[in-house]
Image (cartoon, rainbow, N blue to C red):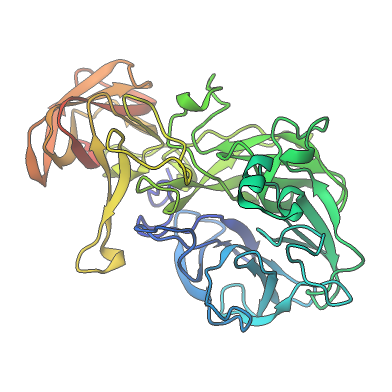
Length: 483
């Protein structure tokens, strides 16, 4: 067990920092991302913030504060929201933030520290001053990523829209072109030569290794255990993929899926309708921390695509560089299974389905009341007072947790619930309809209260635990533990 118990999402439940780019600087792991809100009605409504943890204890995260605001970029006269940034340590030892707002250009800010307040430096441009903008013919200024090796610096960016969507919105050609790579001069803003196409979007993927998983967005580039990887979000809209290359500017070859935020592609789940969690866009990257590697990705809460939270999983990389798809879990960065004798928040579930299945959130697929969702309550308007929970469990809804380390000494299972429900939370081992180990009777009650049941048999070893609600009405579920 780790020194502290931590769950996915690994940051406090009130924080929403999707599109995460993790980086080790010195003896700490820093994460940089967009900034959503629990009650968000659009993407990335907050300013950029950073969090960090010591590399020898990824259970202990500290808030580094706001690192860049919408008022810090003098070109952002409308104070538009920022999305999906990346950060590097430049050859000069300073730290550089790459970002964008709208589809205007890619901005650059600089700081002497990895999580201080960055100051505006300029915009990425060609040697003649041409900016990366729609209409310039050099790709869409979207989701920038930065990679430094020695005194050389490469920028990755782009978008690979579905041709049907591009036609519907009248998007310029750059929105279809896919990912680009460009080497930068020492000023960290000027492109050497011309940007090059790197990975094809949907329009151009046929006949390439990317045909089944074409590039959509979320460019990221990493060197892990000596292998060069390009990480991106595919047209499937729920997975992060990896491609391998021999050098930072050599177009890569598709490798596989690193993670799906519904485990599509694992355990025989080939169809989205069988996903174990509500699907939605995905963005993140790989990071090497000592002898281990992790993938950071995000999930969707609040029954919307605008309230995303960052999660992480350990990944296995073979000597030849092949990456096995990671399973989404509740334990994440905990370093091992969770202790069921300690309270486990229901929002840490990695399996959440209604009797009807799941939804794949998009602008055309809103939540409806037949489905559960992860919500939060805030006291007196103070965000850090938020208590997150699983809401609206109706008959047949499933809530699952992976993995728990049972000792065999646990006697009772206790859950905290509320709602107009009348029925039972039935606890199953290892699968949503696996062996029943407890039945917790639930009665209508507006306030949070505990319900309990004796375990039907001793449980020992590492297991997944699933709660299935059976009954009338709807229940909210905030936490559980064994004693």
